[in-house]
Length: 117
Length: 114
Image (cartoon, rainbow over all chains, first blue to last red; front, side):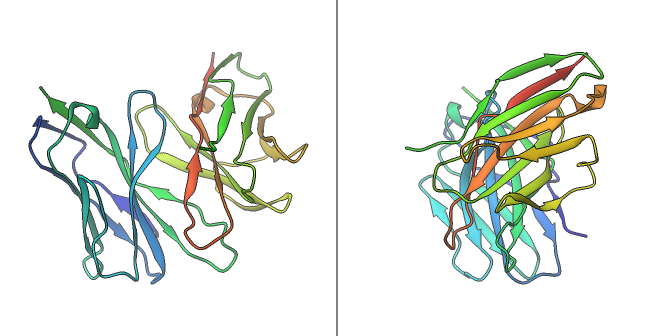
């Protein structure tokens, strides 16, 4: 079965601190993408960062970076210098790449992150 | 910047009624998706659609659900006879041709079944 596990239902950190959100996944496939999505109170789904499984280098997007450990099937998100606007639900997700390219995304249950002033 | 749009933002309906949720994908996208998120739970895949037919559907997508691309721009999700447990946020997404597979999500429609 293809699953995503986020072991931290809720986290709180002070503004400007660094926080790491954990994620593990399970798949027997070798070709896939991993994602972190942010869902603020508006409930819009916003792509934060993406990692191709074939790439060894960890993806970074400004204050957001990942620690991708393929053998361990681990994909954590680090938010540096956290800001109040980072308060949101964060979903870890992955997508198996197939030949027909209409690939569905499988989501974890999410981690609710609170940035405290 | 092009974006996926969805209407209505909130739909309230009585149990047993039919609802149609509408999505306008980004214009040059070819693959379309519906996802569902019951309040407080994870986002779940419902169905993917390509070339005017369903590519894949989940166990959730039973005979009460259907999708259609009636006019080349809209992409609709119909629920024939709504149940209380259909209350959820419904997200439409679309993907452009190419190799990055990024799915662009719409803002969602909140469906409340009474």
